[in-house]
Amino acid sequence: MKTYLLAIDEGTTGTTAVIMDSELNLIAESSVDFPQHFPKPGWVEHDPKEIWKAVGESVTAAIKKSGIDGKSISAIGITNQRETVCFWDKKTGETLGNAIVWQDRRTADLCESLKKQSLEKVFQRATGLLLDPYFSGTKAAWAISNWGPVGKAAKEDRLAVGTIDSFLVMKLTDGAAHVTEPSNASRTLAFHLEKRKFDESLCSALGVSKSIWPEVKPSSGKFAVTRGAGFLPDGIPITGILGDQQSALLGQACTRPGLAKCTYGTGAFLLMNTGSKPVYSNHRLLTTIAWTLGDLADDKNTTYALEGSTFVAGAAVQWFRDGLGLIKDSAEIEALASSVPDAGGVNFVPALTGLGAPYWSPDSTGLFTGITRGTTKAHLARAVLEGIAFQIADLLAAMQQDLGRPLEGLNVDGGASANNLMMQFQSNILGVNLKRPRYVETTSLGAIFAAGMGMGIWSDLSAIEKSWKIDREFKPAMDPTNRGNEISRWKSAVAKALHRG
Image (tube, rainbow, N blue to C red):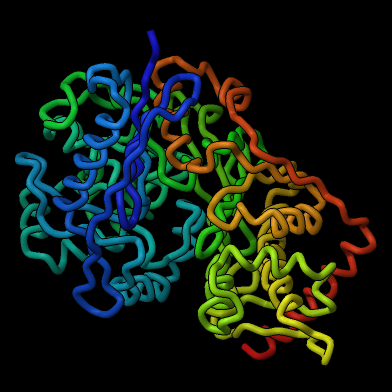
């Protein structure tokens, strides 16, 4: 009898339900979008009821497509947008306001106030995070102070606060469980990385009670069982939960220190497995928990990661298409760039919205260098793709310096990972092998892996590594001298962009 696993991948703009069997065959998937709400400039909200509706519709559609009965689902894994925070009544399960989304910037003043109290280093050492509106803790503090129903519930000890995973488990269990796990908890600013629990002193600094946060359980194991969800039978165990980027790290089988994954989307998200001890960054990268498998009190059960992102990846191709009008479709850039053997001495610094790690120059602007009368749009196209890859190389170099060991390999996913020319150049400039998986929806796959481990399908991380399936491997094809010359040209171009900033 086959074992079927359901992954609920709840993202920023929609929910995807994926059903796979224990041999990692995709049985069915379905996605449903939900609205974004922008009540004021810089504010971004979701209506939790609309999220829950999208979850129900996507799961129902996936089950219908699969041809199996809902009772055939053996376990559920959840992965989610991480820093978005929800508020509900512990006693009734009723939501007390909209969810405040990770993109929301309304707590900028509160973050600045905490910085002026010289608390950023305190938070960074305890949580691995920076004081930024991105994270959940200041959002919770703001809602308690500014939203009447949330503040009233807090005073009466009825307030439950949680990231999206906690909200979904509450709904899936008809209010029976208020739980989370370390990869999500470590994005709140209230969770101590090394103690692996919500911390009284951090909560006090934020101005929130420790009692509002969920119980923290290991990332894989029995969280709860479904009850009263309506679109799923009662009694299905929820056995895996991971934040989306950590889920992609597991879905990419980056199970050993020195292995990293890069998701090429509009921007690019990088996570590197750093092993069982947190590595704190000298480049303002984030230190986060990748997952905890087993007792939270035992240090060896937790895997940590370094995380960084670049603001512009696929967005550079979109700009080349829409802003410059040099191609009609994003996919055309690969053929155009491949029509020349190299970029003809042209470099492109994709600082279209400033430069992030490791430079942190928000005022820098995009820049082409090395343009001559011989430069064609093909050279510009190639320079754009190479510029994306150079940014990733800089970020990974910073991670390697923080970790104190070389990058062992990079697994890639996301829309731009389909660009073979760029992936080959990425391998060339890093000097390591790149692997692209057969199933590129690695976030959902990570939730499948976590759920499967929670019910014993995969015994440990090495079993996951053996199960992972590759589509294509890219191997370095550039000699060290040329690599050094290319990197020197890039560094020179970045220096000019930084000067402009």
